[in-house]
Image 1: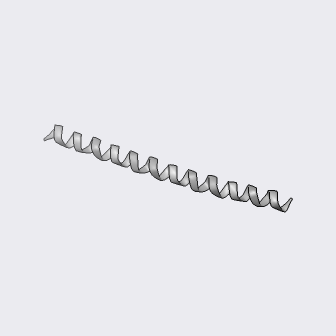
Image 2: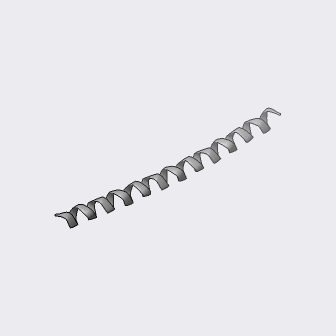
Image 3: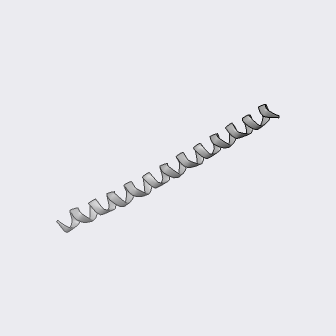
Length: 46
């Protein structure tokens, strides 16, 4: 029982770290695309 609980905890930690990593990747990508869009707007405006 304790062993099963430990493995579940490890899986939970692994899942959380993976989700945080994917969230950071998505945030970085969206920030990059937003910056690119702002640059395009700025270039077309001027």
